[in-house]
Image (cartoon, rainbow, N blue to C red):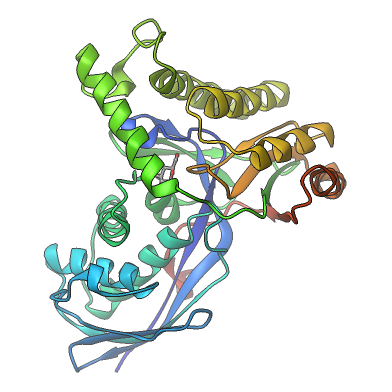
Length: 356
Ligand code: GLA
């Protein structure tokens, strides 16, 4: 039986949070932390997966007939992927594989998107069946929603599928157009985990999304993407979304012309807006942003859904390790929490291992 070996990266979002489900803009990059799925095609009509890190082997009918919510733990994501691909016409070919991931879970670096995209690609490969890239991302987004019950957007899965080495991705979440924007070699993307797992993220996320959709209905636009700042001036949630969309476009432009001061300023504005208008920050994330700014980062902000997890920062590559050392010491002193720093490199999107 033929071998299958694929990989799918996690992502960090440079700027543009809580904009994707409002048909807006985001600027993520796929990172060099990834989920690999290695195994072989099987002829028993079963998808059998084990994780190199997590307990609980998974055995699922390859035709997607098992209800994903009946599966506990990480296997629920696998069951979600098997189900949505079956619905889209994947032949029910079996797979026996080991899943192994270097993306830390619960951190805001999209470990679940990397898992979904990795399993989806492995299943496509096993059945010699293909989905166009955007459809693959959409299917994995749907799998995430099925598995978690959270109405999450398209950013994470699309970044994992479409990543490009050395580039950030300017994504229009309405058309799903992706434009790769080069990241200069002398600019470092720093990610620091606050040491606090995300909490309440699912419930609050659904509430925020519903609030945005209600404002769009009230002012009579298809999505907040179409609203002006004047239209939403009195609504802090919507104001965040509309102003954040503008910041994403400004940040992509600043990146293209190498305007670091402006990039840093936009990251800081984004964090303030997420903290004050969208209210998805925490005291720890605020302390970490402040520590990075004081340590000499160009700018810093919470990244992903918020409510814990990671902060992203930009720094001159030459001073990145000094900035991280000073910021983590300051943060430890201020909060007593243990931060975990990463220097991330922008990586290629998901694919077969042989195509690396
Ligand atoms: C999570 C979701 C994404 C996006 C971010 C916030 O990561 O999965 O779709 O909405 O939160 O920007």
